[in-house]
Amino acid sequence: LKPFLPEAAFGLRYSNMGQSQAPSTAPLDVRAGLTKEGDTSFPLRWGFIGAGGISSDWAKCLKEVPGASLAAVAARSAEKAAEFAKEHGVAKVHASYSELVGDPDVDIVYVGTITPLHKEHSLLAIAAGKHVLCEKPLALSVKDAEQMYAAAEKKGVMLHEGMWTRFFPAVDHARATIEAGTIGDVTLVQCDFPDMCYAVHTAPLAFGSAEPPTKVAAAGQFSKDSCGSGTSGAIVQYGSRGCAVLTFPSWKCEFPETLEIVGTKGRITLDAWSHAPTRLTIRLCPKVCWDEPQGHTSTSQNGVQPELEQYEYPLPKPSGYPAPGWHFANQHGFLYQAEALHRCLAAG
Image (tube, rainbow, N blue to C red):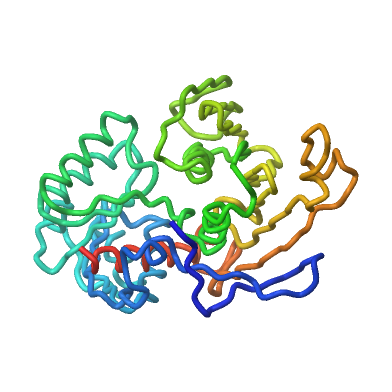
C-alpha cells in the first residue's frame, strides 16, 4: 500500500534538518481506495444503548459529522435517558433496549454499557438488523468476539470496536511512515497503558496483521475487577522480525504513556498521549550510521544525533482534560472514528 499524499498538510513543529514541507496522509481507508473522503455526509441515524460519560462524548462528536443524526437513546433508567436526550438533542427516548433496536428510524447502534454487557447488547442490535459500534473492549474473550462477528456477518451488518486511537491523524501519519519504509523494517514496539487494549493494539499496528505473533509471554498481577489495579506486562514475538514489549502499569503511578516504533533506520514516537496522540516525532539514523563496520546503526553507538522531525496535530476544540462538559482526555478525537464509519458504510 503506497502512501497517498493529498494537498492538506500536517503541521510541522520542529526539524533539525531545515524547514521542509511536512508530508500529508489521508486516513487509511481513503488511502487504500476503499472509501471517499467526502462521504462523511452519508446519512446515518444513531441510537445509543447506555447514557454514560463516554456515550455523551460520542454524541458531541457525532454532531460534527455532516451525515449523523441522533435518533434515539435508552438507558438503565428512563430518567437518565431523558436527561441524555435533553442534553444532546436526541429525537426519541425508548423505555428499553429492545424497543430501541426495533426502531425503524435507527440505522446504527452505539453500545456504551459496561464491558460484561457488550456481547448481549451488541447481539441484540445485530439481530434487529442494525450496524453496531461497540465500546472497547469488544468482548471478554476471543470466543465471545468470534460469535459477535459471526452474527454480524450472517445478518449482513457492520460490527466495529470503538478503538478510536487507530483513527487519529498522528497514527495515520505513523502508519504511512512505516508503509513508506522511512524507518526501515520494524523490529521493536514499546508501549504502556493500564487499560490493556490501548497497549495491545500497537503490536499489529506496527508489525501488521498478515502474520500472527509466534509467541506471547506475560507476567504480573491480574484483576477481574478493574484494569490498572496491578502491574503486569507482555512480550509479543513476531518470529525473526522482532517483538512488542507491552506494559500495563497501575493507574496509581506516573506512567509515561508513550508508543515507540523502532525500525532499522529510525524510530517513531507517539505521545501526549499515545492513546489519543497529538504529537508524532520521527528520528532517523543519518547515513553515516548505515556504514558502521559492525552494523551498529543506532545514533547512540555512532555518537551522532538523529535527524529529527516533530509534528503536532491539535484536536478540535475543546480538547485536553478536563474540558468543560467532556469526561475524559482528548475524547473530542472520537470524531475521527465517527467520520471513518460514515465513509465505510457509504462504501458498503
